[in-house]
Length: 479
Image (cartoon, rainbow, N blue to C red; front, side, top):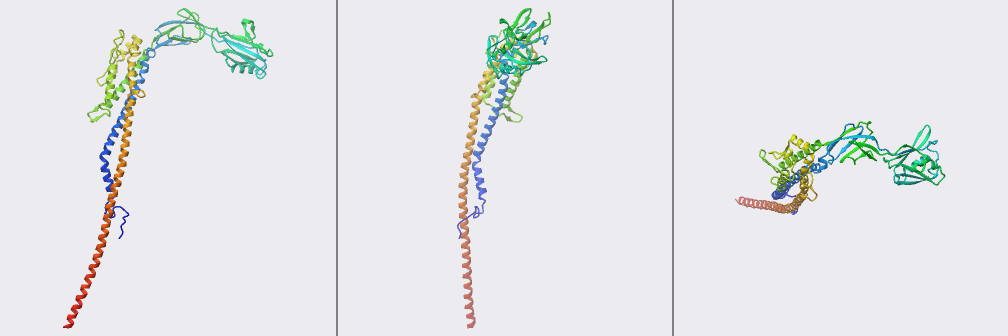
């Protein structure tokens, strides 16, 4: 009689694997379902706060211009004749018109040598000293660089070059050395002297104060001469920013004699209006996002993932307080967003009255900037408030860290549950296999006993039949 069962269920006829699997699943179901519900809810919260953070970042980006008065209260600058000059203006410029007349542009010095046969012609050796204004450098010229092209290369690569570029101009007369100053202005004249060597570099000397004019001055260093509203002014550069407060002029060419052009400085209301419009659009996007995340749709009976969340409710309350404030320190001009035509709708979003906003900007961009910008401006307050949420280590960062920690904890609980259920499943399998083995052994015993009983019953029956026959035969014979 064998006592080994090699496959589960053979003794009992039961599908032990299916039974164990069903019992294990049923055992784990309550905890599994609870963990899954918690994980789904936490994942939805993470996603919801991500949506809120994104809307918040978009909104905060629009505050950069509004909280900077120099960007919001900007100015326009336009010249009637754009071939004479161009101009830009900052918020410190005063709106108005100016008469501009240009006598001559600022120029950089330019010198030229007498012609030689070619760029490869030897000039001489020694020390060549270049001076521009108060700066100078000395360049050694020897047999390795004593040609015209060698001298040009040495000047252009010289350490502490004072502001001179060298080039070669080749014409029918030959090749000439051309020295050009890199800076305009009467103070930036070029002086060239030489010493030592074979004396050949003397051909490149230029120092009029000491009677040296071996180079020809093709253009003198000069300051720009111009006038503003009839008042004479000079500048070493054609880019002039020190004459009209907040205005930079880029002089391009002289005006015709007695024909000035007009510079107009105005308020850049369009730029400010665009920036404020962008702000309102982003604000509405933020409000809509909050409503979607914290609201309840009665029609679909669907709640937002952050319904009743105190973080968002508190944020919205503080946001409304800042947006609705009236700045009592502003005695003239708009002192609230409502005064700019920005009003809250019953739905929680904001609308803009373009006419009211345009009128306020036209009347005084600086007054609007005072309301929005600076230390106590609405945009500045909003940025400080929002930064508490968006900065590294801020409130949203802390919330996200907490949610991620909770999700990690759920993942660990799920892993622990899986491990416990594996042990539970193994225990059940062992118990059922033991039962199955016992049933198989019982069946084997039953089979054995049945066979033995049947065999013994057959033998007894045959013996009884033979004995009875003999007896009968004997009786018959005796008759």
